[in-house]
Image (cartoon, rainbow, N blue to C red):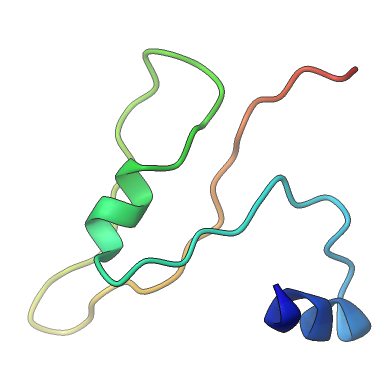
Length: 64
């Protein structure tokens, strides 16, 4: 959380629903609660040239 606060000094993080940090990228992406059932699984790059390590993910939340 301290890391996110540090980023918040330089960029606006108020619109973030959350931040996920995981040692297994595929598992971390799969664990994100996107707020809607039936959405396609999140994909990422993994080939001989590059491997994904960060991604913004659209999530659906009801406003209270």
